[in-house]
Image (tube, rainbow, N blue to C red; front, side):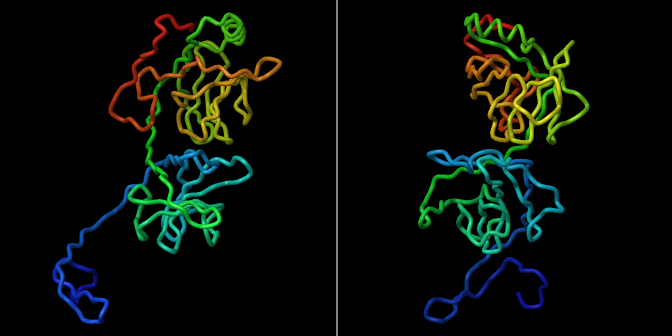
Length: 268
């Protein structure tokens, strides 16, 4: 490869452990990673590090590689980034000398290419961490339904006027679209702590109904919602928020959502 400004495929010399050299065939191909808007991190046994990591603006890149940040929770603001050691790490900021999780092997341009992860306790231990890229597709509307016959909950949802169709608006909150209920002042949107909420005002709160979505760019399918409009918070697992014309699950980009609820008569 003498005389080339960039490495090329061909015959290379590899040094053995004894010091002598041997010829090997090497193939080199260009690779330009396409980074997603989000990564979803799952960790067996649950962890405060689990959740959705959103890509930060290019001005906040670290060593020319993008940084992904999870919504602040439990007193920490976790980031996923490529450390100068060559490992993708999850830590508190990019100045940490050792993260809480690290990938292997070293030198991979994106974390989903990693074949192994380790968690730090008192030492590094192997963990079945999953890092999945996500590029959300936002629907033009969501429909909020209640799939149970609990009269007290049903009456409360009707009193608060929560159920029905929410249409995407031109404005955003926390970098995702805002959805307003048709004929109402209620909005469905994500707040800075990573919850999806329903509220009449676009402020960071729990609203009258919220879901602990862990920073998901869309409402989660199999996650309970919590009513706050009563004297105490009530967990309601029978509420569904489904898109009417796009995937409700942000990982699925080529299948259109259908209402497959077992309840054939949901309350709207």
